[in-house]
Length: 435
Image (cartoon, one colour):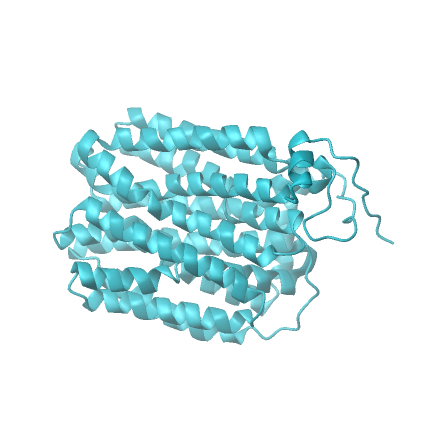
């Protein structure tokens, strides 16, 4: 019989005070996680307004800059399964603190860069590792550790923070970059990282038992967490999970469709949309404003997707999400890039930006049981590999063909293919297990 842990008396004065008002401390942890993911996502999205200024100052071409930023996206994804192992071994608070410190170091160091290899080192390696530690796995882990009820809603909110953070800060970053220089824009990013780090140190806790509580909505104590793994076991656990999951057709369908998801969002639109609009005479601030509009509608779409994924078949939700995203990208290539045309694109594309995440997390939990967070880490790695491929591919298209449009059209076709492929998920469901 599995032992369960009995929470001690509350040891956090804030948890006690909130409890008297009927507020579970899990919402505080979710709020801190929301802020952390929002801020780190802002750092991930910052390169979208740096392409032009870096090219103008240093003379680097778009393909070279895109390669440096693509490396960041690769590491952002490949760190996912290992980030889950680190959280299981060292706890959420320590991992989030280290991640924010790495991102801050990379951003601060970029103030002094002068060579292309500096960009690869700072934005490719350092920021890539840091943001990878706070990828979507952090939100999924918090949601499943701290919430028994409202779990889909929490995953939707935390997922929305990632995508929205990559977009809503862009108008302000673009304005600062144009008026005061790109280093001033990055100063804002540093300030936000500092605020998030203070919140993590003050309020983040690893498990409900740390403040003497059960998970939100739980009626009995969860199983006792396993003893900390050795370093070797911890590093091997993601690889063992990949070995086992790779035997499943479901894994490869989810990995492939999430590859397309990343290629059609982070790598393509987030990285190159401002430059694409610049080719048609739109100011960077105006284009960034369109991305912010996408972020607003993304928040609505992703939170709604979390609610829907608790009620409907995830496969059919993903069918519609990928299909509509593909049609919106194809529409963009035929639009006149007027304010009206771009607004239509922003609304329909925004509702779909990362609405794919809640149903994908749910499918992973249903199919892969107690290794779901590690397996989802690898699926998320596919997402970022797709993002890196699109970041480089679109930059290559712009440099050698003088246009981004082929990359956007191909991404739309890939999304339509993903909408058909996801229906192939047919395996027998396993009992869901917490991350």
